Image (tube, one colour):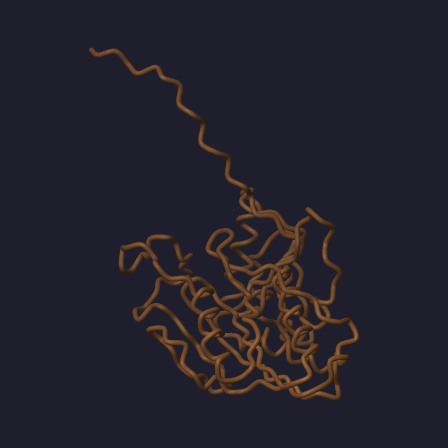
Length: 274
């Protein structure tokens, strides 16, 4: 027998467990029920930590609440999604170094974050107009369709993706490296359309996989989006703001048109988005 290699092997690096303050799950139907249950199991197995999971649905008898299979620190908020977000997103930011809140969007929800930014603008400057407008220029991804509400729904996949795909580096369908990133594409798209009309952004809410097939975006990105709206409020002329709720492969792209105003329209003043 040959001599065994007794060279000490380095221990694998410990994986960082994602930590959140509260996690909001949009909708208590089939998707929301699945996400909440997955988060409960992940927390029980030490794969994620959070203070609570909040499932938001206007129907108290929604599937997530009715099934009774979600355990742990889970609460239900009986509310319209927009009304809930208006209140929840005004919460103070956590202290530096402390976990922040996160939001789990539903694949079938309206473009809630673009609608939220419209309401933010209207509250801050009621004398100005803030309206969602049709995203008439294509983004240019393989799947690029205009939805009934004027938003564009885009994807790099012209195939059927696996349910709850976590978008790994190696795409499970084409079995090759994923060479695309939707955030970069929307940034380039914003630069392109900016040549025809003053355009800000993009204000992006980027969903990333955290645990057990559940993707979410951090509320820190919501604060960055407020910064973009502050810049729009500080402009005296009309500007458009590109808003995207996206993942690495897919996304919904909206356009908020901010009407003309004065440079003092924003009481808070502009803040630079990070």
